[in-house]
Every structure is written in C-alpha cells, then in structure tokens.
Length: 77
Image (cartoon, rainbow, N blue to C red; front, side, top):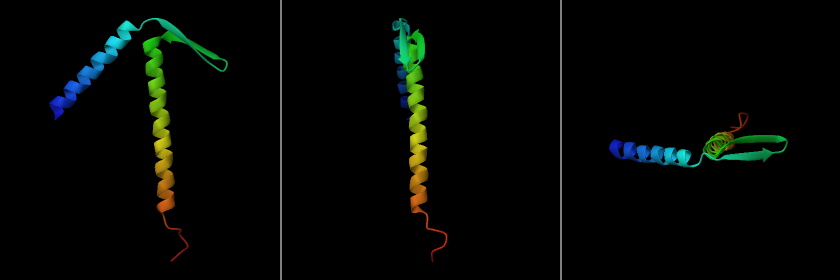
C-alpha cells in the first residue's frame, strides 16, 4: 500500500511541477484595494493554501459546535 501511495504522490508532484513550468505568465489579482501580480502557478498555490486554512477552520468550528451540543448541561441530573 505504501508503494502505491508513494507512486501517487510522485505523480501528483510531477503534475504540479509540470503545471508550474508551463504556467509562468504573470496574472494580476485584484481584491478590494489590494492588487497582487505573480505567476499563475504561485497564485493557484496561494489560493489552494488559503482554501485549506479556511476549510480547516470551518471544520474545527463545526466539530466544536457539535461537541458542545452533545454535552449535558452541568446543572441537570
């Protein structure tokens, strides 16, 4: 199983590397008053990482909320 995971990971890294090499053209991203210019690959990686962080915080919030709902109130018997 580890060999299959390693092969899939290497294929994924190769695809990411190929994407980065083929997409070196600069793009500009505007958000409100901010403007960022960078290669397409860097923008995609930044958006992916921001999505991971926001997804992680949403999942943590939902887990904490579900845990609180499942707890018994401290004053009831």
